[in-house]
Length: 375
Image (cartoon, rainbow, N blue to C red; front, top):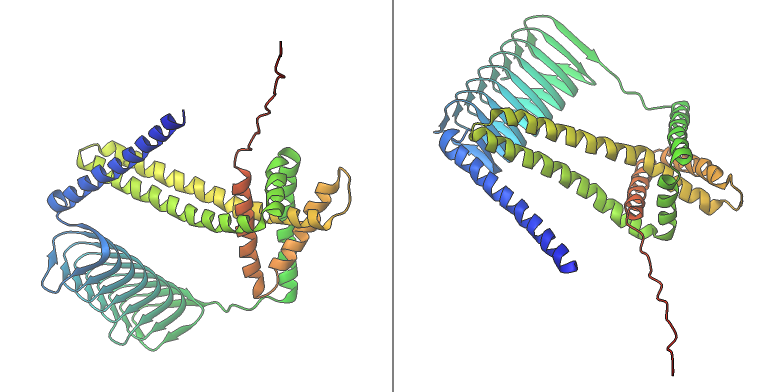
């Protein structure tokens, strides 16, 4: 029986590997033959100064350098994006840093931690960034729309400017109207912190009490596991967070490969179904992880702490343990500076205990010995 189980598991792994190999090979053929290299991925993608991409370019890499020409649109996701060449269409970029020192003929839509424009945008520029800088040589042909932590606008805008920022420094020129909202972030007062803690405590108590009433084992078993194996819970919690990120990436990767593969063989109707299924799967996984981390972990850790502190032996013990424990958890995680780190530990301990409690219980077989009959 055990040999048969191992064989089935081995066959499943071989089938998964074969799926990746076949689909990956199909995508590679599609890129080389029909798509003409319009989809590129890797550690670094460079379009050299003497190179021209006919049509659109879809790029995903750690670093993307556009030194040559892209005749169509550029859709890129990377850690760093540098455009010193020319893009004949629009640019859609999501990256850690985006630097446009070349020319974009159409619109540019940028989401980045830091974005810099020292070149030219022919039409509109939409940017969401922590720090946005339009240098003296930077030009936006039409409108500038932004949401930024800090905006330094030293260039030229041919149309209107509309934005929200925490710090706006304009030394450049705006041909149209200018409507910029500056939001000052004030540090929360002691009263704000207390009110926030009370609201969070009430929401946690309502959700945890509902589970303790309707499905008590989902609250009691993880808290019991946490008291029995605290260090193992912490380690499993770290592994659970990493595993969640890996699973989400695998779902996206497999869906992308399958969508490209079935699209290549002409099954266009399946492409939408695959993408929709992947989005729903990621959404459901993210929602469950959110519930476990935000509501479940404080309840599990809180009840474990409450049971340790409680000496009352009565049917109401678990309710008092939950209430007292959640008060302790909310109070500790509301401490300025260190509260965030304590909250992270609560999530890791709680998730690890929940994963450990999901393991099937071991049952020990009782061996009954029959006395030997002697003649």
